[in-house]
Length: 349
Ligand SMILES: C[S@@+](CC[C@H](N)C(=O)[O-])C[C@H]1O[C@@H](n2cnc3c(N)ncnc32)[C@H](O)[C@@H]1O
Image (cartoon, rainbow, N blue to C red; front, top):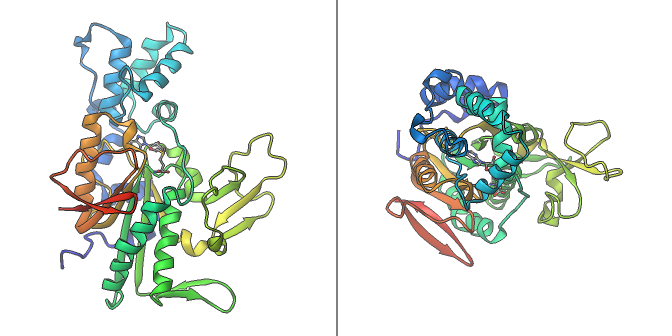
């Protein structure tokens, strides 16, 4: 096996992902995720030495379980204060006890995490970075691998929310394949990709609720909605969904909203799994690319550094990391910046 060969069998991986993410978790990410899954007794507890200060215990518990920063002055802290202000005081210790006893993927934790973070996302967010990625990284990967009998491409979008980033990346990959003559449009209008390609764009998020919509690949089209930056030339990657099709949240004011679904040829490369960036091991190894944009802002300094070490471990040789425009690199010893027009990517050292 060469260093560029993913240690994960992509075919098996994508088949498993489509089947059942629990099965995936058991077979590919055994130790760390299994521990976070069910055995509450093994989970870290907040030290009792903090004198019963409920808020301080919550802050420490939230950081221990998720890496999310909720200390005073942070945006997560403001949101935690709002949640506490809405709760009868007598309920706070009961809630804290329940959170201590439950794993971070329980419904109680899901609701708390959704209240502490923002799931805002849209297709083709930060076009300068995506253009740089397309021409400087993806084009090179496709050129280097197109002569291999089985050409693999593995990308991980960490903190993908409702999936727009995952589908944007999958579309850019297919665009690069089309430019290279490795994909095209059949006479009936359908998209094909040369069968040598094994492509997985894995989207993960701590919040399972958003992943349900991500898997549907179905979105409401409205002004300033998820399609606000969608390039008109990419219209062919969308289908309009007829009435009564998959359920996504519809605002009561939207009389007859248009639902658009990502076409099946793109969805087949795109997979979604719950994953907490606080886990000790990444969900994949030997990835070509990791995107983690607009997520680290929610994490503590320690959580950010831990996440960047995970990304380094997930990437193969010469793999690239894309962060959000306001994210800073906490681990310069692990990544080399590559500057482009108004943007930056990080190459694994
Ligand atoms: C603003 S969205 C970013 C979506 C997308 N990456 C983008 O740039 O458009 C932030 C996402 O990070 C997720 N998140 C926050 N803390 C996380 C953690 N510890 N592990 C995994 N995901 C987390 C949230 O659930 C949320 O969906």
